[in-house]
Length: 272
Image (cartoon, rainbow, N blue to C red; front, side):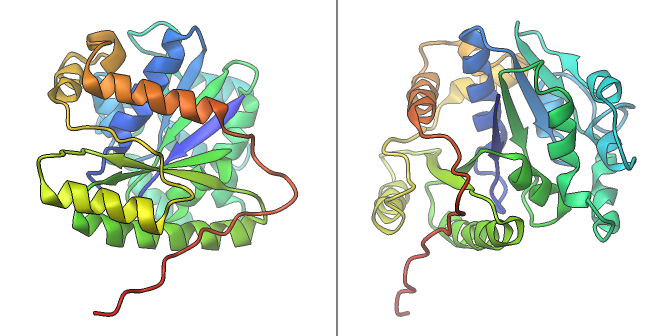
C-alpha cells in the first residue's frame, strides 16, 4: 500500500482537487483508494456531500483516543459514489487538535490509523490543512511521498519556501525519508505571472518539480458541484488528462528510501 500526503502551507493552491483527482483516477484503475481529510475546513468532505459542521464520526476521532482499534478506524470510513473510492471525512472538531499537540504520540495518530486498515486499501491519499501544526505533521509522518501543489503565481513561491523548510524540519525530527513532488497548478499560459512562476519553479526547484502543469480548467468546478471525481465527470478534460500524466509519473517514481532522509534544496535568496 502507498500513502501520499497533499500539503502546502498556503491555501487555495489546488490541494483538494489534486487529492480527489488522483484518488479518482486510481479508483478508475480498479484500485481501492482511501481519501483521508484532516483539514478542519473539510473541503474534501463537503465535496462528497457531507457537512463538516454536523458530521458525528470523522478523522477527529483519531485524535481523541490513546489507541485506536481496527474496527474503530473502519467505522470512520464511508463509501463515495465512485466505486473503489472511500472517504474518511473531517469535522470542524479537528480545529481543537492543536491544543493537544503537546501530548505524546500526537504526530503519529494518522500513521497508526492507516496501519490498522493497510490490508483493506491499495492507496491512501491525505488532504492536509494549510498551516504548520500537529495535523500537517501527521500527514507528513504518514506519507511515503509528498505532493506539493503550487499555484503558478508569485505569492505562491513564498509559501513554497515555507513548506520546504517544514519538510526539512519534519524529516530531521522523524529521521526518515520524505521525497516530494512540486506540482504547478492553475496554470494559464496567457498570463505573465503563470509563465514566470513556472520558469522559477523549473529553475530553482528543478530536481523536484514535475515537468508538466495542471491547467486552469472549469470542469474541476463543475465536477465538484456534482460531487463526482473529475475523471468521472469528464475523462477527456484538459485538467483530467494532466492529472493522468502526473499519476503515470508518480507511479514510475522509486519507493521511499529507508536508509537516509532527504533534505530539500532551497534556492539561494535573490538580492532585493
